[in-house]
Length: 260
Image (cartoon, rainbow, N blue to C red):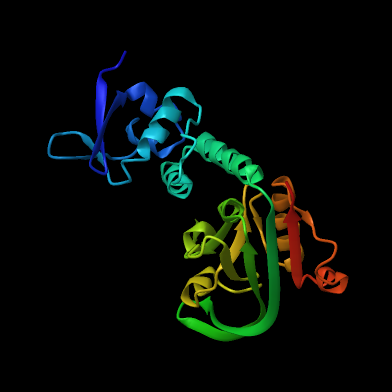
């Protein structure tokens, strides 16, 4: 057996083994403790990680057993999911998603209401044709807005964990934009042909992706299809009495319900 390793995670000390820390080689911890990434030390010589120390115990236990063990009254699922994303332990991320589906379906009656809006606006941008030679161009761009309300905050977190903004070249879960546990507003754009990647960043244009399908959402049809897949798997069904069939077919309003 390898010598024990003591970690200082956000001021909380944990002792484990090198074999445990590298049990998932593709994770960030696997990279750190296999020498592929540098590690920091605290004043006592312990490996230091500037993350939440309290929930790290669940991550460490998963590294030891490959099983997610949480207390029945666990209230920090969002924090644990963000920490799992940071450490990039993919099996743990998948286990958390399954757990959230389990918790969501265990809830009682719930309602999900989504209203959608679409508009077209002109985007202006410069195109580099040659060194020090630029031309001004413009193109029409589809801009989407979705207002999502659910009486199930657990389902809204589940939905948010599968939708990601692409901004500044990075993907970020929309759960980080959740300010109201029962409501979230999504604003994004479709990809614009010929628009340089740096212009999305410069003009603060966010695109929307769904995981694990790794599919970019460039239309309301794709958005509705993906949301329905997630909602139906969580026990929701379409409310046939509302909205008007024409509104649903035009992708303006979606209302789903769940009875227990």
